[in-house]
Length: 99
Image (spheres, rainbow, N blue to C red):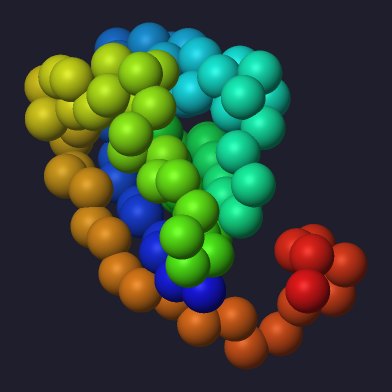
């Protein structure tokens, strides 16, 4: 299973637009319900967004979804700090993520 954490900060005037685009991704996820894919997005008070993606081997990637491609279009223009992605390892988990 591959886990990735992505963090970036949006420009203040673009924060709401970015959130709206992320919400569309979740609408598509709920509609299609792809197996083996887990996805979490958080918005912090300063306009920072944190995304956590967990993908089982052979599962579809969130990047293949139409709403995600729309979200990625113009991401550079929405960001004050560009996205930084890193592979993540869960060290502890108390009822937050499924095992």
